[in-house]
Image (cartoon, rainbow, N blue to C red; front, side, top):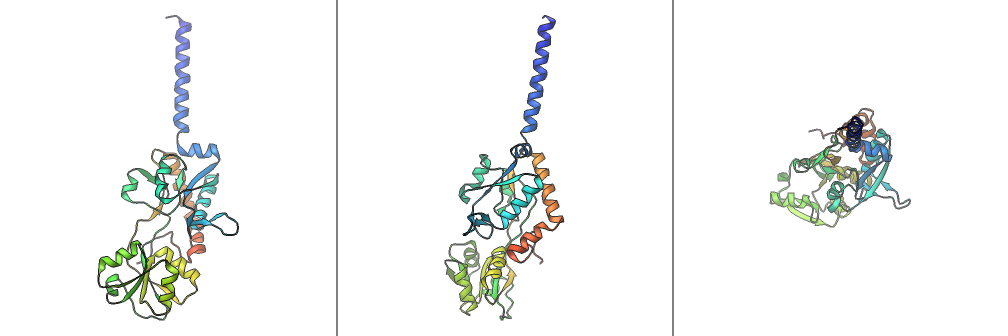
Amino acid sequence: MKFATLKKILTAGVIGMTFVAATAHADDLLDQVKARGTLRIGCEGTFPPFDSKDTKTGELVGYDVDIAKAIAAKLGVKPEFVTTEWSGIIAGLQAGKFDVIVNQVGATDARKQVLDFSPAYTYSGAELIQRKNDDRQFKSLEDLKGHKLGVGLGTNYMDMAKAVGGIDIKTYPGAPEYLRDLASNRLDAALNDRLMVAYLLKNAQLPLRPGAMVGSAPPSAIPFKKGNPKFAKAIDDAMTQLEADGTFAKISDKWFGIDVSKPAAK
């Protein structure tokens, strides 16, 4: 083999190896996000108080929207929201329609098998609601046997109450209806998600108070495709900073009046 030919082959090989290395480097989601200048965020857009359109401006607003914007800022890029139905949101992430989902995705063991997750940023669970002037302390669903409990029709909370048995369950199309009945002494308690309880009580202007936590739920975190170690570290670092500087607590207080970025005190 002639030297010139061998030199060409070796040169081509080096170039090829350099290209492969560069491609592998660029394959990490962090490089893609930085190059694009935006973090593409999947969300429903119809899920207040987490993400929904402002009736006056048409802009997305909510707890998750503020969280996503703060994370994008820490990454040095702009947030780009992509709305989609919940039923297809995980598939959309896997198909590359967006980089992350910020939409109260529970970090379950099953999901962790196919996706990577950020640190948790929201902790919730089922919580009772009672009247402010009601001194009874219902500490579990079992304590509500023989009492009237208001729940949303077709919700997990309806199923939870039915599983206990002995509770006089009253179903409603939504929270406003059962909160009014509770405030009017037609119910002994109501049941909803801890975050929704905080939000509802903050905005309902009714003489109600949060009751006992009666169920748990996996914490919510931000999922993204596996195989992106640089991105995973960047997200972890960003969220650590946002927790340390009080941003998470401030956003949480804005929407719920309590800090839901940490587990509830027992």
